[in-house]
Length: 426
Ligand SMILES: Cc1cc2nc3c(=O)[nH]c(=O)nc-3n(C[C@H](O)[C@H](O)[C@H](O)COP(=O)(O)OP(=O)(O)OC[C@H]3O[C@@H](n4cnc5c(N)ncnc54)[C@H](O)[C@@H]3O)c2cc1C
Image (cartoon, rainbow, N blue to C red; front, top):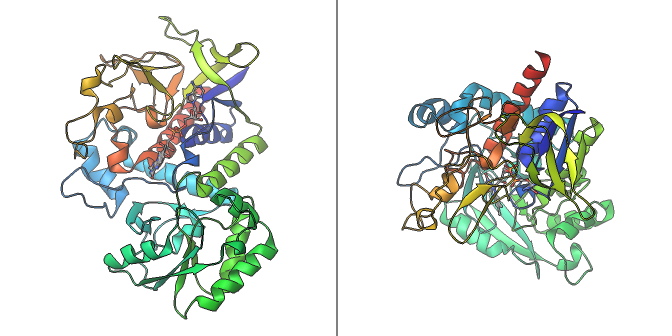
């Protein structure tokens, strides 16, 4: 029997599985499908915006977590774990990405948020980003050449440059021919990135950029520099162009997120962790016993029971499929029917103003836990002794407004994995 069954293969589930497996636990991951890594920017947003008006980016998110957040929101998942453990989780993530050959880094000023350009030329605070995005940091001085491709959907370099200029950045744009990327008439960034795994394709691209870039400039591209050999592709293009090159994430599917998913999944498999996608958990043995014996999954042929000593629920919140709802506004957690703080009336899900500084209760609601990520009921009583809950399922987080979802996934996954390792030693 496995020591641990992780349900969900988003960032929080993968981080839990890695932390526990590294500590020697026998781990299996099951998931209905792919997580939000395939949708986001592939960065780690730790804390982007303070809950105050006017909305200002947080400059030093770890200091913010240790200071303001811990005092003002002691039930926030970061406050429950403590800023030191959040910092340790991020260090562990950075070491993991280096070990899997997809290194992540932060601002040149240690502990500061990066400010990276979006695909419409806005500035986005984030704490960690893959190496290939780091030269886009808006706190750097070099002027930018934004490189687009005629006919490529969802990346308009002139729009990006124009909006960056409004932020006081020196930026200009150029459109290169689409056939530098692919001869396919209809392709998305994933297929273009796969094309750049081929060294001959990237040499052609680098030569074209070299012709248009001016001395002292850095070049910003959509995220097309390789999928399986992305670090090699980025390094090659940058050295052949002879200037810093960075990627700007575009709309889903997310190439940077897919690279991270592939790297983490492969690492887990090398460590002996089974990662099985296509298994939807539909129920469990959990009743009033306070202890979980098995989790049931639906497959095309027959239901399966998965048994382990410990369980981690990482099924995402309202966005990831971890919660379901019906026309009455009732919201429930789908595998263990855990108690939720989410309002159970539809009229209470949203505040009247769409852009409300406090956010909307449907997103801030979720599962209450203690510092070990064990689920609690409204009275603060432990619900199951062998279950942990991580990531987007957690209550008292305001992740959309605060831009903290991936940071919370990494931090809570790490905290749960570490605590499970401690429990298994005792
Ligand atoms: C479009 C989009 C853009 C985003 N952009 C940002 C951003 O810019 N910044 C930011 O901080 N965050 C962003 N996020 C969110 C962020 O990426 C995730 O919230 C974060 O990575 C936490 O993920 P998670 O592991 O908790 O859940 P998820 O990544 O949602 O993973 C949930 C996992 O559980 C599985 N699952 C669900 N139900 C079941 C079930 N019944 N049985 C088995 N498996 C199940 C799913 O298949 C999936 O594998 C974005 C999310 C989306 C959707």
